[in-house]
Length: 406
Image 1 (cartoon, rainbow, N blue to C red):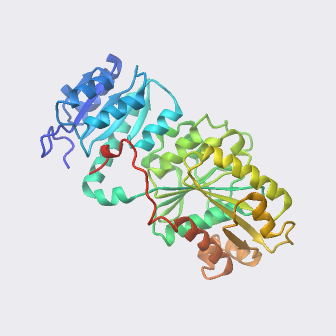
Image 2: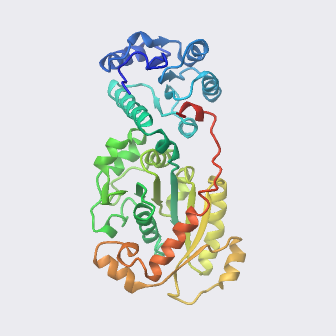
């Protein structure tokens, strides 16, 4: 597709923008002209003008709409969806810095939402990313539509249970067996081991990503991640203790969502203490792996964690995984444990220190080092549980789906 052409084969403009103020208009026009687009397609009036205009003319392939001043941005975007044609890609800008609005727009199908004040660099980067997305949709629309991101959060009810090993083995299996681009996000910013398990040092981009999650795109990730496998990337940190600022509100959810735009699977390794102040990491989750043992304290904390998950991520599928089974006698019998937490134990992973040690000495994970062993079989059981109902899943269509259909 020639993005610099004024009209496509159907007579649609390649581009139009409806902005609410002169400053934004002056920022966008030089960028548009540099791309070879028609700067006369930059109009004033914001989204209200866009809805009126597009009701009477063909909708362009790429549309920038300004939500500034809107009293109900979601209703205005619905009105835009009613007049937009299939195949239109939307970049929204606005003056409301609200993570819930950002999440609603992104999950609904808007390509990106930028908060004013805009810089030329930020706007140009977003337009170029959108341009790449349009080209990708033109070249391979069926593949683009079929990608359904799994955002899998792994959290242990206490430390030392092997949650990180579960996360890395699961991610490796997704990359190797499912042949899907997969990312590990290790949120233990000081003591994470995701990269170490593959004998790698983490990159330096995670702190920047938490400070500026809106800027995370494919180019950023190429510099920020380390790759133990051609389809597996790790975004992690080994920061000096106390050196990092607390993530801003909503940053974790935005980061997980941004990763989901670049990978088919995102496996998030979350320290349990982070959930108290940063429950937003659960909001984007499609699946949550809750790691436990059969102790009395774990039963208590499973009950609390399951209640928290139900409140924060009611649509996520939850899998209770008992790890290191057989290391010590169970304080609570399995049936009593399940009755107390009111949830079945979906997978039991045996205690096998020899296999874990052998893999660690080779700088890899058990699922790669001993693929037919007991540990690897248990990790594969978890993988199959998470993907068991994919073929039958009835994904709810968002109210802006038609903007991205081809």
